[in-house]
Image (cartoon, rainbow, N blue to C red):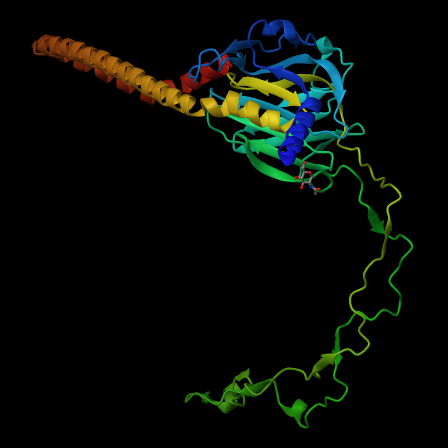
Length: 431
Ligand SMILES: *[C@@H]1O[C@H](CO)[C@@H](O)[C@H](O)[C@H]1NC(C)=O
């Protein structure tokens, strides 16, 4: 009983301190909550739509890019800015590239407070940039952390799915300087912030004062001083006369000079003599440059801490149609998981079925279109055939036939023999 009570109050405590700072499902007056950037007048237009296929006509509605080859810039403030010091920071949202994206961003930026959102653009300072980025075969999930004004890319490759379905992206930064990236509510990458990003300079550096001693013995082996060259070793010639060679029958010593056998490699010859090698008794091993603490390094247990005030989309898309949805900023990992189940996992199967149905209908439409085109082509061919028959009937008349043969001759002879030069001149003139 007591244990249960204790556990119960612990959970109550945990939930009481957990907070949701931003939750956007693009229902109701979503446009009142978002601020379009005014830095450019040709920015792409967002709309809210469930898309071409969806699990639920209401719940599946999200923010969709609607114009091809455009930059997009849209942001929204959190109800109140917060710091994630001593707390988890969870950034979660879904992305549906239903247009079958060729090249474009699908990421979210989390900004500090105090940003003039009407002036938001790609240059605006952000804390974290997270989400998929696809351009042809180049696919990655960005996790960019800003530290002291510098953006650091994650060094670990995380590959996003490239299909047309909705996928959920979750980033969790933890106070013990670890992180997790979840795709579709399953852990895809995890590790330490200091290992997977170069946030801090290295802890130690090579001592600039240290130098390899002049008398450092580098050679692991030496020639054996005991080894002696065998007697007569140098008397073995490298080449010998070919024992197979014979003086040609018609060789004339008077005219040709004295016959000499051609030389061949001596199989007994082993090259210049070298003594055996033995381990060097003075060998000290490779010299290792001693390291000293890096004066540039400063430990920072708070490097995961951000003041968060806004979320924003800053995207470039070639083929538009991406739908973003269910954006969540919280310090509550359990809530994010529950939200993922409720807003994403619940609809996965239905979306799959909707996609299959959509694909089938598209295929049917295409087949009907093709059948229509084929029927039209056939009708045209028949009409042509009928015209031809008529012509052939005319050709049967003898006078008409000779006339048409003359026409053909004139047409072929003139352009081939004389016209080409002239034509070329014409082209030059036109140019
Ligand atoms: C960091 O904290 C998480 C809980 O939030 C825990 O699961 C993990 O083991 C911790 N990692 C390290 C290296 O302390």
